[in-house]
Structure formats: structure tokens, C-alpha cells
Length: 365
Image (cartoon, rainbow, N blue to C red; front, side, top):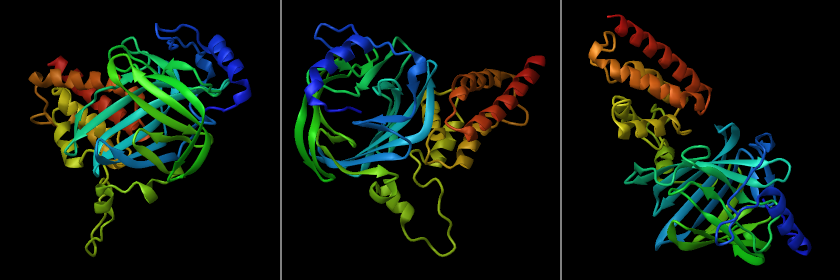
């Protein structure tokens, strides 16, 4: 993401501030960014951030007295936010072997400067293996939120800027305190490492992170980089769920294609019944249909069956069930355009066709 050219650091700082953004808050953090939409692309890299599908980082260490693990993966998926195509970067975090958070983060890179910008995230927090909340989620262009600068292409000590600009939700600030650190982690020894200090005005606390040229993030608080590269997950990111999926099976038994899904398929099917009527069930269902570890067939069924599940008699939907039909139609109109892949898009189209036909029939009665 960043190039550590020490001799021109002062020039770089002045140039970046003058050309890419200007306004700052009371503490000197840049909080206004105005890049032309046509300049954004969803794939690229700079020295300290790699935004290329398949690239991954694996971290291990200790946080809050517990063994931690973090896997960051650049997915072969995009999401359009306010007219900008962004790249999805997934983060999966474990504590003592248990999944505690999965986030889908949205990034785009300015093709003229190679600065990387952050457009928001969808967050699923977990408790006892089940989704328990979505704290911290935000999207550029919604509820007053605006993208922030995640990492400049030419970092210099003293640069201060907002990475997140989602009022009352996420307001992370980034300050570069050094570009000359020497750091040793399990993945190797690095020089001219960028050290950042991260704070937020909406809560107390400070975090420090370290970034190495050609690699990216190498230290995230108590977690240190163990390995990085293309498609390393099968080699390094073994969870208890992976172990179960890879355990020896009885002769003739077939592997469960959804064994690694974040939401067990039976749980997702149960939630499907209440989609359109129960927001909590809707959240579980939505997480399941957007989980890359859920098979395409299962995701398709979870969407297409919106025209059946939850109705007393799906072949003869009663007039009093029209509100549920309309609620599901509205839901598809809202989330369908951002379908994660063609499988989901086709399933949404099929469900929408069936539900609108049902609604028209009920309205004629």
C-alpha cells in the first residue's frame, strides 16, 4: 500500500494532503476525501496493501489472555456501493479455537495514486458458534457514512487521517508514527516497517499495527503474521470445523458440502420460515445465503424457497398471508441487486417471479 521513500517524505506529505484531501478535525486528522468515482478500481496493489483475489494473510498470537487466530482473504467478489465497485476482503477471527467474528470489508483503489480507500463492512459476531450481533457494520453512502483512506501509497511519518467515517458507528483514525521500524515475526524479518497508531473519537483505547513493504499488515496488536500468499487457507487456517470436515468417514459416506458453513444448513432452513416476519431470523438467513462456504445448491434453495417456506399451504397461499408475501418481495428488491454471485441472482429472480405471481393472484380475490 505504501512506499517508504524516506528522502522525500516531507514532499510526499504536503503533496498528498494538498491533492487528495484537505479538511481535518480538531486533532488534525484528515476527514474529507474526494476521489472521482471513475478513478476507483476493485483490483490492484501498492507496497503495503494487496487487493488481488486469492491473496491471504494468516496471523496467530495472544489477545486478552487467549490464543487468537486471524485469516484475511481477498475474495473473488465485488460489491457496488454508491456507484463504486469495491473488492470484498473477508476477515475471520478465532479465540481459543472458536469463531468470534467474520467481517466482509469493502475496498477500492485509486488507479491514479494507488491509495487504498475503505468503503465499509458487514459484520457478524459470534457467541457459542451462533451469530449474536452485527456491531460496527456500515456502508459508504448510507446514513451519512463516507469512505475513508485506508492506506496511502506514499506514507510518511506524521500523516493522520480517518479510515472510517460512519458517525456514531465506526470512526477509526490512523496516524503514521514511524516508517523505519525493524520487526521480526514468524513469517520473517522486515525493515523499514510502517508503524501506525489507531484511535477513535467514539471510544477509548489505542491500537498499534505494523505494515511491511510487499506484504502488508504483519502485526495486529497481539497477532503476528505467520504466513501470506495466494490461497493458503487450506494449508494454514484449520479450525475445529475444518477438522471435523477432514475427519475419516465411514465407507460409502459422502462429505457434507456445507460442513464449513458459518450457519449450519438446518439452522438456516429454520430461519427461512420466518424471513419477512422476524428480523433476527432474517439476519441468520442473510448470513447463510452470503456465505461462500455454503454450497451453491443450498444457497439457491434457501432463496428460491421463499415462495414456499413459512406459508401454511404453499400451494394455496391464504389472503391473510399477503403481508408476508409483500414483505418478501420488498426484501428481494432490496438485496437482490447486490447478490454475491450469479447463483444467488438467478435464485432471487425465480423467487421474485413466483412471489409476485402469488401477490397478483391474492389481490384479485
